[in-house]
Image (cartoon, rainbow, N blue to C red; front, side):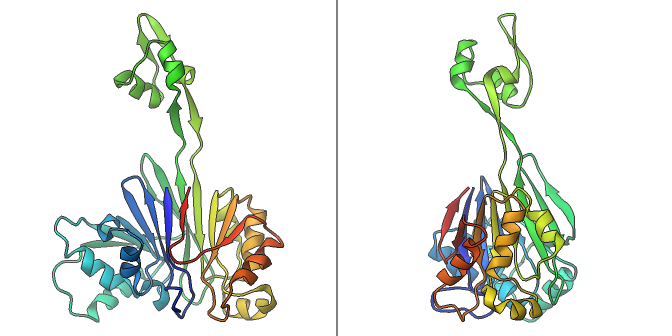
Length: 296
């Protein structure tokens, strides 16, 4: 898995920071989290093909998180062979999306399916699970987690000792099935180990609520808003946002391995103050910047 940050500012973009969005590449999947204005250009800037987007997860429908949608979708579906994209979001997403498209004269077909989700596991396949929890903001808002499923890894050295070579039998063992070769029974645990899947969580535009801790529990990576430093805690909470220390407290209390801060107010020309603020509580903290790539 690889994450590319496409936008890391809050409501107002700057010369250095675009509106919120990041792209998660996971095998053949491309999952876009939020889609601020100019997201499609940011994807091109950082070497990501627009047609690689298979799902879009919207936290909420404030303009800084969704104004890139019409242009991105129009560009994707102007490309031959583009396939349907599923867009997930909080309550009201169908209405907001319909209004967004009705405000412009679109050419061609924009083939999307909008799904409203809340406090649930809303997608699962053989590789990963997507879950959401509702947050506390001025409009319906979701946070999301992607949980990679555990997978079995074959130890080829052990497999060769049993006379096994790459082929169907190894495939069966990797799928957890017992096989026989030359009257010898081989169990999956004889030649393989279980590799625990990774968990990524994205929380933004919210006060601290219990769902933040529940969703972030045991995450390998927590991507969390840090709109303000802790000396502006009252302002942050009045505006239904978080401080750097709020994000760090969630990471610390939820057994998170790494915290990446994003969604910075433009008042901070140097976001190191936010990183230092968070590290008072949770040391393994990094401030995101546009173009930052993280391999999980």
